[in-house]
Amino acid sequence: MKPLNEMNVLVTGASRGIGAAIAMRFASEGMNIAIHYLEQHEAANETARLCLRAGSPTVITVSADLRSSEQLKRMKEKLQQSGMLPDIVVNNAGIAHFGLLSDVTEAVWDDVMAVNLKGMFLCSQLFLPEMLARKYGRIINVSSVWGLSGASCEVLYSTTKGGMNAFTKALAKELAPSGITVNAVAPGAVDTTMNAQLADEEVTALAESIPAGRLAHPDEIASLVYFLALPESSYITGQIISPNGGWLT
Image 1 (tube, rainbow, N blue to C red):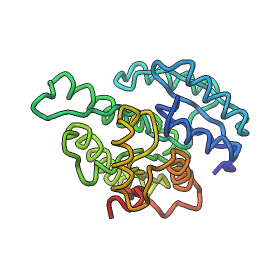
Image 2: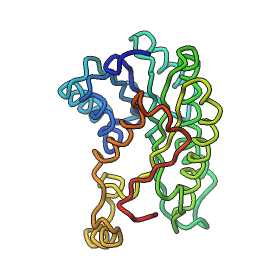
Image 3: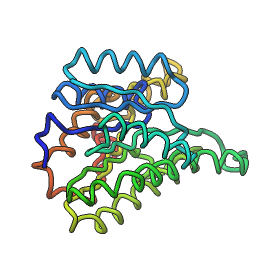
Image 4: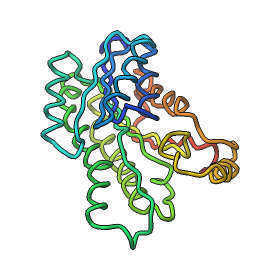
């Protein structure tokens, strides 16, 4: 096993929000960071600059559509050429959907499923051969509290996150004999752009419904992801851990 500060970390959807916070948390420990994004080129570059400033010796940005196995294979080739095949994969990228189930079209259903579930599957599968050869690896999936409890008017999103949780539990059992852990972090409400569409009074009401009295900061989610990636966390696998301020217990 490599020393922690020589490990490579791939974070999908790392141009902003929770993904960017996760990338910077690993960077602060001197780890090599691969920042995946789809279209937010400038935001990804800014995250890369922040990671370098935080202490990462090597940072690379890679663009790929998680719905496309061909684009992901090209992303892997780029990482391989740069000596950045990941020891730790954080499947963070995802898209939300809010609306009545009766209004969800088949095209929208397929698209959200493709990004949130197929993308996680493809990305995990793609980097498994090297983890299996090393008999070491970490796969950490960023899920949601709604994958545990479900949310009204978010049936599609909740379904993808519930599927992510089931994927996590099953893959953990499959890979445990090979020294690879698979866990999911299922945050409650987090202060990110995903919740930016809420009016101030809605945010206030949401915070009041949470026993902790506030939304989480992305850094708090990042710290948990980092903990699960540590070598000493090797006995934690197949777990869905929900930092939600007591919102769901």
